[in-house]
Image (tube, rainbow, N blue to C red):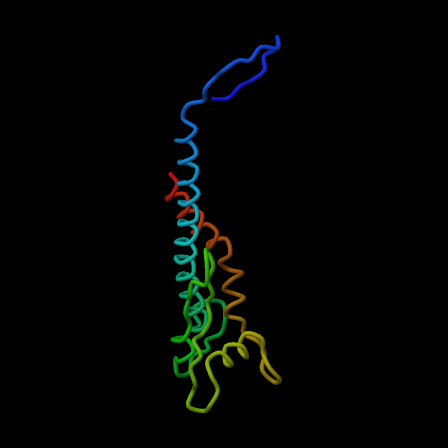
Length: 144
């Protein structure tokens, strides 16, 4: 119950019903949004993981960069926090001593004598809107 001073200086009593129900629904919706964002990021991460692999395989706009398949098979998405994740190669050694993370960096940014072939950055540019749509879609399904 709340008390409000009326226009004539008198105290008017009134009750607001359903506040607890509304507050519970707001809290649940907040949890639904958080859960939806987490799920959406995982789904979008899996999508982008596949797109980076397709790029490395030469099935997107970039040139093919597959020799042994070790790099392409090391690319993975990992959830790193609430609605956060990262796509990168696992650190695996090639027989010659280099590792997959070094190879990915050289391809992405180039080196002396080697032009860059940015699979990760180009994939991001191509799919930025799709990622947003995927996450929004999952959140909407959770709250509606």
